[in-house]
Amino acid sequence: MSKKTLQRIAAALERLSPAPGDVPDFSSASAFVWHADPDRLEPVARVNRVGVELLVGVDRSRDTLIANTAQFAAGLPANNALLWGARGMGKSSLVKAVHGAVNADHPGLKIVEVQREDLPTIGRCLNLLRGAKERFIMFCDDLSFGHDDAHYKSLKAVLDGGIEGRPENVVLYATSNRRHLMPRDMIENERSTAISPSEAVEEKVSLSDRFGLWLGFHPCDQDEYLAMIRGYCDAYGVAIDDATLRAEAIEWQATRGSRSGRVAWQYFTDLAGRRGVTLS
Image (cartoon, rainbow, N blue to C red; front, side, top):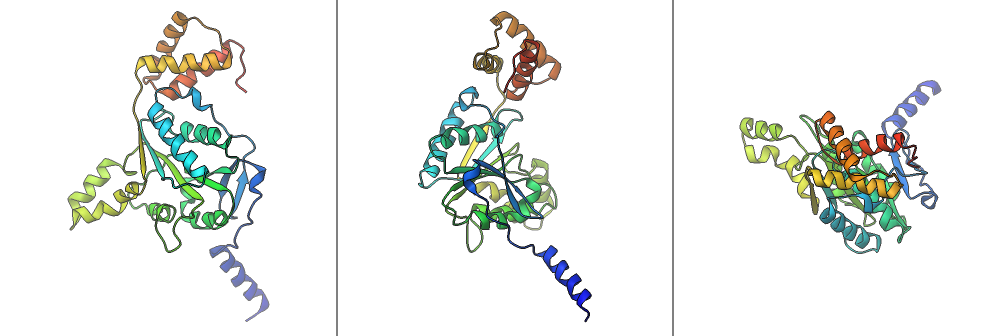
């Protein structure tokens, strides 16, 4: 066999099983993003988040997640958390805000974002985090699984599967619009067509059961919607009287056909721009 052929085989094997990534300097940032092929943890210079005090209408979820995160940062037992529910109600914003709040007192607490499509490589990411002196929130946003989607099997390694199990210094926070991480019609379809209906969906549905904390987010009412905007105005110094804010915000909501924290922020962004206020 020629040297050139051996080199091609070695290159192919390297693609199938890439070399372990380099462990980054975790003191260089408080947040990192996991990238695969090649494996690396890329530091984030500035996290896109708002202060936890600006999140209105999610007091119970906020307090529960702060307490769980503070326990974890202090080296105490803590649960994986699934934040599920209505779109645009601040699920991912809460995760980032809570990390920022707890990190102020515990700078060794880091957050690592993993994209859903990179879940099959999550074991390699855990190997880089395992044994580090820092503690890590592994964050997966907008998590859900559809028909013939096997990515959820990779996630079990983070929760409690595998021989090695989840590293003691890693906890998983995930957000989803679905409580069981899969669409209801998929659950019902598999139950109705399977030989053993209960077993057909148990593996996928049981994934959500592996989260110790389930925090539900529900659509906000009009008063909460207006309170969100008023909170943003006060925090960023945007002057507007209550009557004008109410009229404009309700009109904005009507044009969007929905009312949520995301819509409140979008209206406020437009308002700040019209008033010449920067949001840096």
